[in-house]
Image (tube, rainbow, N blue to C red; front, side, top):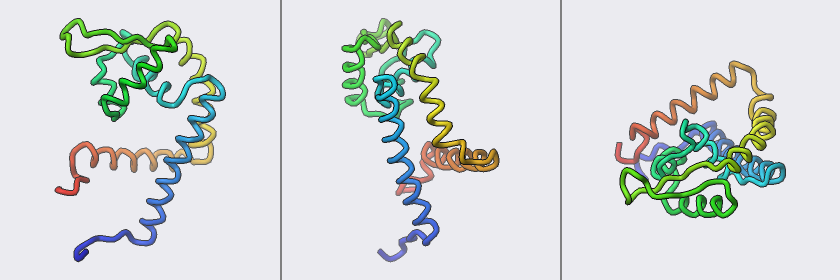
Length: 158
């Protein structure tokens, strides 16, 4: 324990606030999204990843990378969504080992229907209580942390 840089009181309070925001915001977004559209937050995340593609389809590994999900989690999620007609899964034409997930017309209609109320909830819960300067500061903070996550600076071995 010698040499451990313990969190200062303000850092500890900030960290715990951050954890609480993550848990409570995700839970609230999920509940509201399901109540209003029948989509779960993971459904919505996958649909967004597919609508971001001009072809409405992506390789499974690309969606995994974007969402930071394990392959098995995405596979199970896509299976549930395919059973509801929101997406289809097929073998990749480029290499038969890979799979492609594609947004169906029903999936596109579902996200188009869900997006307005979801965005309004995000606005109300996240941004309406912040000034433009606070929004910029929060974005800057998040970008710094994301940079540290992506370049390995924050790793235990760095």
